[in-house]
Length: 431
Image: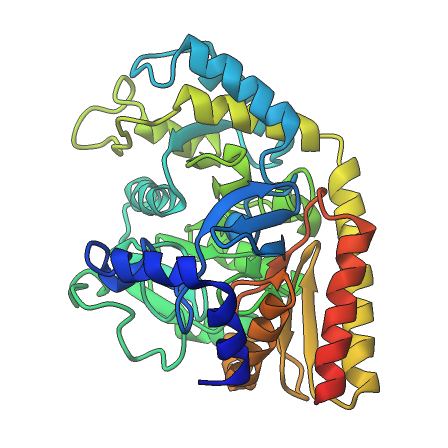
């Protein structure tokens, strides 16, 4: 056991007991394996603002922020207040209510390409239904996704997330489920066009910023080329804005890049801290989900018991109204820029081979001397050193989920960011 692990276990005995208990009833002792890290994950008892506290009483400045969801920090007062009011009125209706109209109107107001909206419960659901809708609208089957792109657990998209790309991401996904999925290299327009030269496609799905792939922003010319490619092939362009939605700008990545997709997939920030997913897009495409206009088998089904849940939409609507004027997002983007420059300077001065990638208020460290603009470059970097780096920060009260990028929230103070920089400087000096 390393010194870092010894220090961790000495401070987290209650978490260790909980994990031993969890392993009897949860595979690997967790509800989502990315949350597992060696020697065992700590367990949270409370989260507020920029900090989290574990069951052993240890506090951490949180830069994982609930999978990048909490752009206002944990449990922001304005959202908590509105949610409490809504729970008194009802937690789940299962029938229509005005909140779903108000929330859809707010999305249409903020997201440039959105004309109509449908809600669901997760990003995976949103991706699944959006792909189905694109196939229904175009009458074609082939789907294009990119190396390093993570779009949830839907079978047709759950491939080529991490190298080596020929190895399946999961057992249980049939070859037929992936037969109509074409994988292309991110940020490489020429190769993408070449691979699709003789292929009829229904849709291209892309993240404006690769999240799981290493916080890699798309090049604007790449997205512009995809837009033109989809027009030429009579296909739909889908932006997966589950991470970038309402973070890069009030209108998401499409406003930031000034490129409009046909359909947008939303989640995370949209729910104000509660489970959510949504599809937004062109009216003529979205209306294919209307069985009053298109009878079976022509319409594209979408639905679910908890769709447009009133608690989620209450939180989400308050969130979007808070972010709408762009002031908070612009401030966070400025802080992200400051952190990136400072981190890069720390590593350069210490002669540590590292590249700090950034997109708005999202940032990630890669231990390599080479520029990181593809998932291959991200995975060619020293990932064991990245794991050691994040564990060292965690031991000193600064939390990143190991090997994942960080996110700055409006709850992070100047002191929080300075603490991050100070701890990184200590690590860099150790070499």
